[in-house]
Length: 289
Image 1 (cartoon, rainbow, N blue to C red):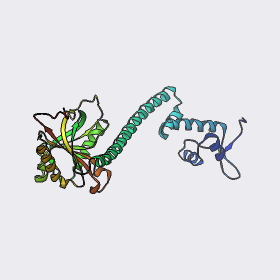
Image 2: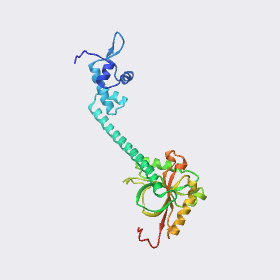
Image 3: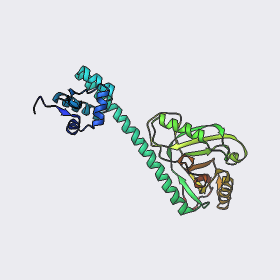
Image 4: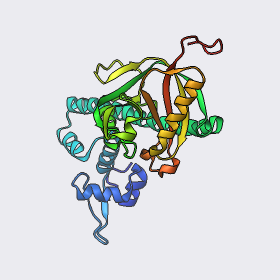
């Protein structure tokens, strides 16, 4: 190559794979100034050395370096500094991958819940009651006295729990859920009650008082469409079903918000699985637990 050859900004763009807009931006920021200007039209001209410098910048940008980092590296030309920057970038990229993976898992989980909710309604129908066996699962939960009124959305508790999930870098793998430790009727009578909210999460080695394993349980469940204020009728139907089948209620109620406000849908599209734990002195031969 002719050492005296100069390249226009368009030619340099084609050679290095950097847009002319970006090359002008680098010039404005003092990162890659042209070698000179054409005397006739004042166009930017770049020498071979500047072309090599452009390739260096392109390579560093592909490594994720910011402009301030580029200036420092270019100025010092220090091997150990480059090594350190690459180590820092590896760490940042690994964290980015972990964050994206958690986002992907959460998005996939939300989609699967949405899809399974539609299937459950098709299989069981609205208000159809069925037996269900809850398997042990790891959850992140928060429990304290707060508003439990069915006329209100627990959005503050939801927001609090989401922040805790993000703080601990947990992966959600189930719907936002609530356990009413007083009595299911309390949410239709009083405003304040003993409310525990939780998300099922992937098994983790993280130690936290908010992480626990929920014990397995036999429950009767039903699917409810719409607003939560109509849930009292749902609970009454569950209790009547349990009595008719010879079972008794043996624990607090569970509500799993399969489709809720967080998806931006109107309340008529909300889908909630409502469950009550039950026990029977003499178990049916067809349902052993």
